[in-house]
Image 1 (cartoon, rainbow, N blue to C red):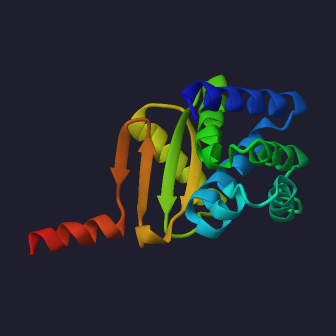
Image 2: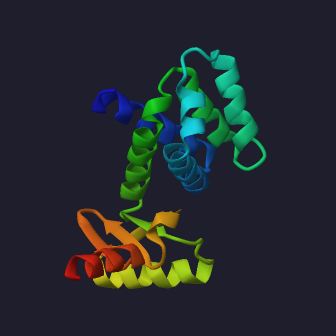
Length: 175
């Protein structure tokens, strides 16, 4: 899908969430759902398969998100899937996250960790990254077991890689 369409969907979703007064919560839920969507082949195939009726695909969204997300989030994901734009969901959500962060004068910091981080760990990490980059941040944590340990943080074009996987790869290349 063209960037204009992706931005159009993101803008519309942003405006709906802002009008509902749930922008922060919806943004976080959409971000987490988009990362799950990207990493789960079965989910991605189920929500993008044109052979599956639209109502069934939307039912899958409602079953997955219904008890765990705001009604606004469920409706927005259901709308994207219903219009046949499921494949573009991660790009649409990333554009929405960028738009929401910009509205708050924040930069998006995407952090990949092998394990879930506590609220205290996230707060300390956010402060450390803000200090290192000199920017106010909107921290988005992704649990990624392939990191093995440590963290990989991306803020704009800056990547800070303190992962065990990278250290192992560096040791392999030295040997």
